[in-house]
Amino acid sequence: MSELPQGWAHAQIEDISIKGQQRKPENDHEIIYVDIASIDRKLKKICTPQLLKGSEAPSRARKIINEGDVLVSLTRPNLNAVAHVSPAYNGQFASTGFEVIKTTGIESRYVFLLTRTKKFIDDISGATQGALYPAAKSSDIRSYEIPLAPLNEQIRIANKLDSLLAKVDAAQAHLEQIPTLLKRFRQSVLAAATSGELTREWRDNQDANWQLTLLKNVASGFNYGSSAKSKPEGDVPVLRMGNLQGGNIDWGNLVFTSDEVEIEKYILEPGDVLFNRTNSPELVGKTSIYRGEQKAIYAGYLIRIRGTELLDSEYLNIQLNSPHARDYCWQVKTDGVSQSNINAKKIQAYQFELPSIKEQKEIVRRVESLFTLADVVEKQYLEAKQRVDRLTQSLLAKAFRGELVPQDPNDEPASELLKRIQAEREALAAIKPVRKTRRKPVQKSHS
Image (cartoon, rainbow, N blue to C red; front, side, top):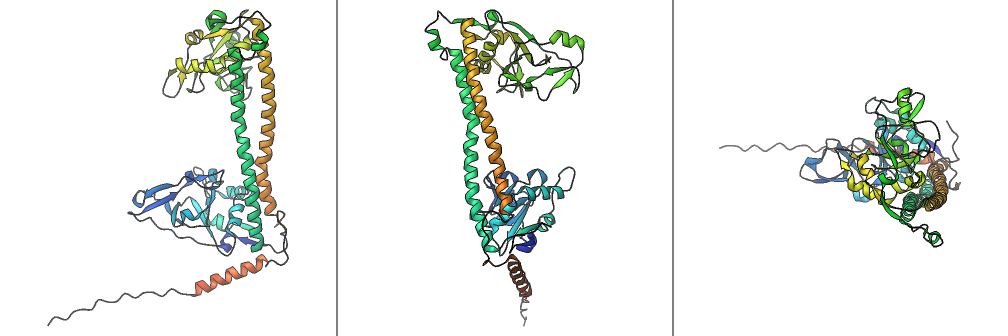
């Protein structure tokens, strides 16, 4: 058992909470029903409850919730779905998939913040049972031991965390905009590269004209990949649609082949451009270039296209990832039930403005330079995001070790607070409710 700060005490959640009520909603009344889908896990609050007639409510809509209650999901995949009930949901119904902690005599935000800690989630996760639907029991939550600070310190901790976590949330919100901005930047670079805007001033000193052409006239190959079954292990990787990421080859999540005939037929050469001919509508047509990083072949959902003396393969990769090419793919794709397809003939018919080989190489150089800058920003973003994501748990852990706010020796110790809560409970239990006796109906005499 860990040592607690002075004035703190160990307590179980059931020591500082009361058992809630359960009942079935009345059929003719409208209710707000809170289930797992209603909880915003990032904001840690109720955001999208259902408005239902009592007669329409699921059988799990049983637990009555009130302002200040703490909702804790009992199912293992959803243990991070917790919420602090606001006044708007007073008297409404929550799913029995929650434990409803109704604190008494303490600051409810203190318990709510504790249920957000990694330690609480990990401990309750370890208590879950059931193979198909692993879940904790109500008793696991109620018997959970917490470090209880004096009441005044609970309030100071909750206030301080509210302020700090709001700043963390604001920082996360700003960081979350960066991937979208980077995506827009890269698309703008590709658009400028393939429209001639990126090298406009370069052309002022060159004799350079762009010619409208079809891809089939300046590229070669257009070969479909291997349809043979791949294996988790083997001699040579088989690149699939998932390995085409952002114009480059992602060498993770590989499958393999050892079939020598397949390897000889579909072996890739540096500069081969792989076009994803079958995928979901928004991803069909994504393209990446193979630069000879390691020996590999390619799978049947990909088309291999090669450059020529008229078309630099790096420029081809840029062209096929441009907004102009993406628009073309969207127009010519054939849609199936869940996937779209673009065959070799359609990609051969792709029409675009082609600069000279010299300008193509200049475009490639500039795009690579700009993308390198974007990659640096992306790396910095990922590092910053990791630090900020860790910050919430770091602050919570610090708070419940008694290190976030100063202790005040004048605060009433938590042990005295627990005694007072227990005394109040015993006093309430001693008051027996007066039963109403049903009056017997007066029998009328018949004369």
